Amino acid sequence: MKQDFLDYIQDTFNFTPEEMQDFESALSKPLKKTLRVNTNKISVEDFKELAIKNNWLLTETPLWNNMFYIDREDTSLALGHTLEHISWLIYMQELAASSSPFYMSEDIVDDSEYTILDMSASPGWKTTQLAEYYPNSLIIANEIDKSRMRQLHENTDRLWARNVYVTNFDGRHFKNYPEVFDKILLDAPCSGEWTAYKTDDALKYWNLKNIKRIAKLQFQLLESAFIALKVWGELVYSTCTLNRLENEDIINKLTDKYWDYFRIISLSEDTSKPLIRAWPHKNNTGWFFVIKLIKKQPVEDIKIKTGFQKNTQWFEKLSNTAEKTVHNFLETTFWLTLPGKFYTYRNEVYYGEKNIDYFWENFFFYKMGIKIGKLEDGVFEPNFYLGTHFDIFEANTIPVNQEAIQTLYSGWEIEMDSQWSDGYYQVYYDDIPAGCVKIKSWVMKSLIESRFMRK
Ligand SMILES: C[S@@+](CC[C@H](N)C(=O)[O-])C[C@H]1O[C@@H](n2cnc3c(N)ncnc32)[C@H](O)[C@@H]1O
Image (cartoon, helix red, strand yellow):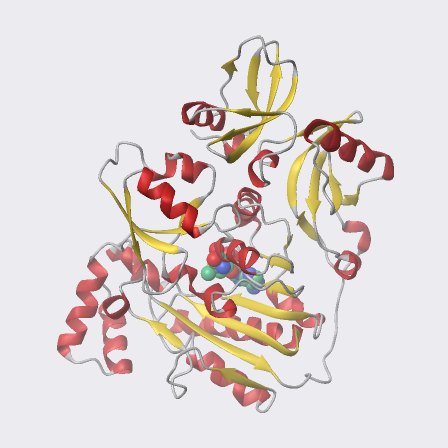
């Protein structure tokens, strides 16, 4: 472990030698595994029953209702390969890494229709949490790094975040849209101190010069977010670091510049300590820092630069004829009516449920809602995930066993008996919708895309 880092922690937080020892030894222990229940798909109560059936021992975490420590006696099947995980009823997420959406929402599902920005979103764990807490809101998930887009794309699809629209800007660009968002999460890019859990080598490049460089970007992102926030809107700033330069100092800088424009909302009962800083040796989690503020007045005299060219939009709204084709397919095959809007990119069809007219005129989108299938030569074919998210459809459904679902997630085929005619079906297991398939000549084919296949 890099000594400079330890010295910094000891000096800055006035740790006694004993506490310092606790801190260091907490770092060498692996973090306890936590899972998050995807409440978009299953309630916590129903999941607890499933866990009992599976002989999984769940223990409540100190922080949130839908996150649990998990112990299993039989670990012959990796948790990531269990039906519960591959059908995204649950997913593994570190407790600390899940904290900011909890503080934003106070762990309450809010049905209001907000406009929310997740300014630095990939791989999208917190985006999908926001989609659960704010199911009726429009969520813009932004990420600058194209190489991290795929994960954001996949995670929002898997978790059926149909109110999430993805953009690919430098977060500093959002200041050109003053007072547009009701809530903003800035889970800022940071110096990566937290990787100290993973390897002793992690802090090799830890030095104050690097941290000051990243802190400069963090402040610019925070200022941009602050300008883009509506008056009385709320902004949550979080990092996975402990040092003050990336945390309190960033907020102090905002206070120096925008004194009287905002106030901090206390996240703890002790209002003299409004921010939350979690420590590995005190909180049994990874570390994180989170602070929440509310804007009181507009920022004036902003120089606006949009530079957006409409003709660069990749997506198109589906034409009336194509939209009719998709609706007809869904209604006649599954008796499913989708009330939202359809978009297309190449031959892919996307479905989103929010009105995005303002953003359509101003933003370049990387993804619109979730991908539901493809349209080729006027014929629509659903993808696998369309069949995982709603309740069990009213028509064309087939009950299958666990083994069949594992097979379908691997992209393999299943031989059927003659009672099943050719066509598209939704498969389900134990009342859990599990995917869309195609039957042709008594063979069931999975419609899962290769990028989602279980290897
Ligand atoms: C801490 S990670 C976000 C983790 C994510 N919120 C989650 O929960 O899955 C920070 C992200 O910020 C992105 N980033 C870095 N510089 C950025 C910038 N100038 N604007 C927007 N995003 C940026 C990084 O590529 C990285 O994906």
